[in-house]
Image (cartoon, rainbow, N blue to C red; front, side, top):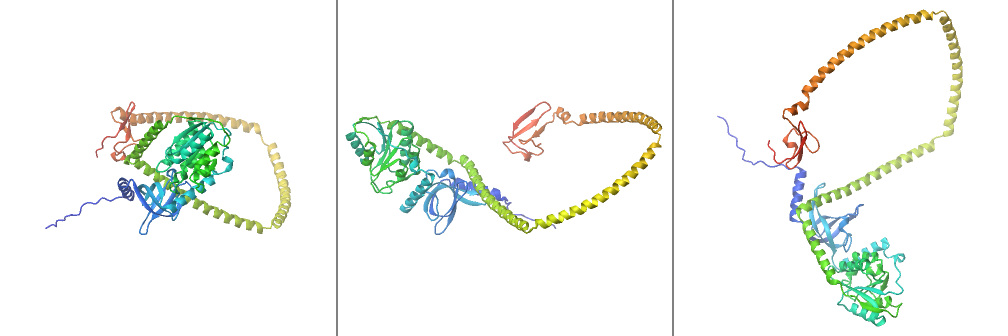
Amino acid sequence: MGQLTFNLQPDRRVYTVSDLTSRIRDLLTKNLMDVSVQGEISNCREAQSGHFYFTLKDDRAQVKCVLFKNQQRGMKCRPQDGVQVTVRGSISVYEARGEYQIYVESMDPVGRGALQLAFEQLKKRLEEEGLFDAARKKPLPLLPSRIGLITSPGGAAVRDVVRILTRRFPNVHLTLYPVRVQGDGAAEEIAEALHCFHKKISVDVILLVRGGGSFEDLWEFNEEVVARAVARSLVPVITGVGHETDFTIADFVADVRASTPSAAAEIVVQTRREFDKHVADLSGALESLLRYRIMELSRKVHELGTRRGFRKPLDLLRQHRQRVDDMNARLAVGLRGRLDTSRRRLGVAHLRIARFDFRAKIGALHRRLQNLSSRGAVGLRSRLETSRRRFSMAHLRMARFDFRAKIGALRFGLQRCSIDLGVRIERALRVKRERLERLAVLLEERSPLKVLERGYAIATDASGKVIRDADQVAVGESATIQLHSGRLITEIKNKEA
């Protein structure tokens, strides 16, 4: 009696490493698209491409982070070991090494010490770029007739500046661009105001002022976007931020730094005594509307960017960027190895050349050349005598030879060979022609075009390969069908085994 066998274990799907990693990446990208993490930076390194790779850790765990170059604009500080920061970004998987990591989109320092560190880092970087050089600072106009003022319309600084300018020069033309001087978005408003005076509103000099406050209150004037906007301005800029002991990044970049807003007003008008003051109507409503519209569009773009359809191409781009950095590092190591090997070979060759005695070698070659020359002369004379004797004997034999009879016999034999060769060539051509006709008939019978005439077709994929199996193409891909007359471009809608 036969035995019955039951298999109660369900079939398990076997993943490849690539499929498993891709599935983990999709899960992380879907559920952790926008996270904020606080920790301490360690193992920070900057690649040749400008991207930063570092580890964010606390007392119990750590996670790898990647900060690409195009995300660094507008950040308060650059990554540095030992700094406490809060990063915001998305979590994904770097498939080449199977590691999950945070793709950082923004980074903020934690605490006053971190702000001071960000201040020193930005100051050092801008100083290395030459933004603080005295050679690039512009001279102030001798007789300014139009003055641009960038500050908060409700602060004490604007009242001090207006009072001094009105008292000293009632005819001066003062244009106020109202901005926030503290809080989120204030730095962008200040940069936009500088750009507006630079491109749209014609003024002779710009006053960038703010009243006193703490280090955190004045931080907006330490932002990189403000410093670069001041450096790009073709109009001279005078800064008067805080009190005499307060220094900001904008003060170092500006053409002239004043200790207070009142001192800035004194500096700008100290070369004139009589100017009419004309206060222009504020165009802030339209500009505020534009700023609001830009903020709305930016928010919509950010929302679209967080959707999965846009995140996956971004993930692929990030993977390739990190892979390029890895390949650059490996290439640098390989080049250094090749360079060390070449240096060692050059040293060995140099030692061998230094030990080589050229004079002794040249003397030995000279003696050998003399010996060969003497032996060659003796051999050449012997060969010459032998050739003379052979020539004499050949001359005697030729004198006795009947050339006319020999030439006649050769001519007769040549004619016979020519006739025989013509017959053979004609016979061979006839055989080849018959074979060619048979092959042409056979080729015509086996031609693929004959098969196409009977209603068959040839299908190829997008790369031109002949499709012999339905598994060669996927649903949604295009295929080309060659008919007897013309071809069709189709899209695969469904497949059947």
